[in-house]
Length: 310
Image (cartoon, rainbow, N blue to C red):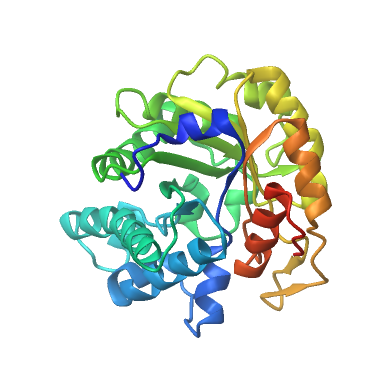
């Protein structure tokens, strides 16, 4: 653990700042992430780069580092010729690299509690074909649970503070993950990628959040990897339906152009929005794609009452 205070206790005391996008921070440092493993490739090739990315966010004001295991799966590593034992080592390493960044931050004078959230992305992330933004993979809930459970066991065994079940496009996959985290002994948050008031697969957010309402293992619910404008309604629904703390970490507001493989437009992420999310019930607040350390510093400033700008 990176702190003697549990994350659940911290949420009761006030907002907690999450980090920003791992991929954009690694790309800004000059790393090529244009293969199917995305940032998970660097777990094997340049693990120190991942620690540096986490450290940048801690120094910017993040309280929680989300690990680089979003796209780290046994199946994905197997496609690269990495056997199951080595894949398990790399998945667990993602947690240790975030812990190491926390130690380095504290050695540099950061005195606030720091936590590690172990990322588990959706099944579609392993496919690396964009289906994590569509869902509806043609798999049953039982098949999805069987896919997720082995990786979650490895992540839980590395003892993060929380599991981040993130960027889920489909309530069926969320149902599988709620089952898959039972008995692991590590709390989890559950967050969807959404389009307006529905999941990417088209289910209502009331339905999607309700399936986690009675799950003891799920300590927060919310949204990530969506447009900032989609957050307000989702926060209200998540808080009302579940009564749990809400987690939000949207993208910058820029749009991904699949043809040119580049981001278009401008950021629409503002500190004023962050204050509104907090007022509606959000307790874990950060950013996802294209949200970097400067933006996280702005979020931290906005939540502390300082004059932050993103």
